[in-house]
Length: 239
Image (cartoon, rainbow, N blue to C red; front, side):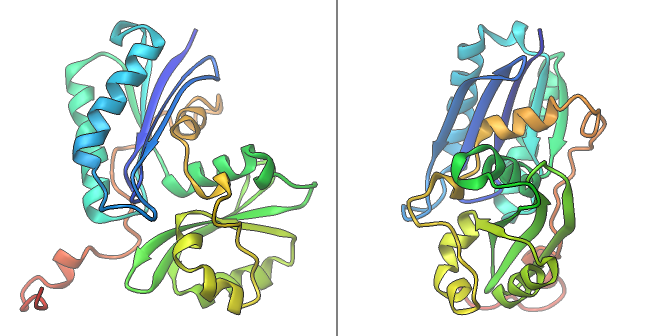
């Protein structure tokens, strides 16, 4: 019996999940969009403890899976540092799972995100500075396009290149909804649960059975240099 807990703080939301042999026993989500600033540092550990309690304690856990981005610099550091601490404290295997892949899995797994054979999903995460992190996956979970970062117009260009019926969703779709619509895309509705990553999706990808994430290093996926590095050696902007 394989027991996994998974979590992610790459977006503004804190998500935690737990699975046993693929069955979801716990799913937790808190924070924005639409709310106050992210509270990863106060929400993550209590969420993990609830997930552990749901599966019967730390001695039952075989694997800890963590979302590695792309996402916000601070959020990624919180999740990865927490995973590294858990790795030192226990005997469970610790693996990294790309956040966009997990969001795509969430989209495919929900009724609003599934489609007929040949359909694809484009998960979107707000990358700040007027840009999005994005990629494309088929309805059976195969990645069609690599992770990328760019403005909404780059997402529209990807969509036109795929020439497939698409599902466009995620926290980035909420942030840039009007821009995407003006570019001819049809993002998921604002209240559609398909816009939100699930902690259980992190677990299920780690438990996929093909070994894809078993050896993943706990290194954040940034896709571009963090602001702290961009400003290194020069004066940071005011504020």
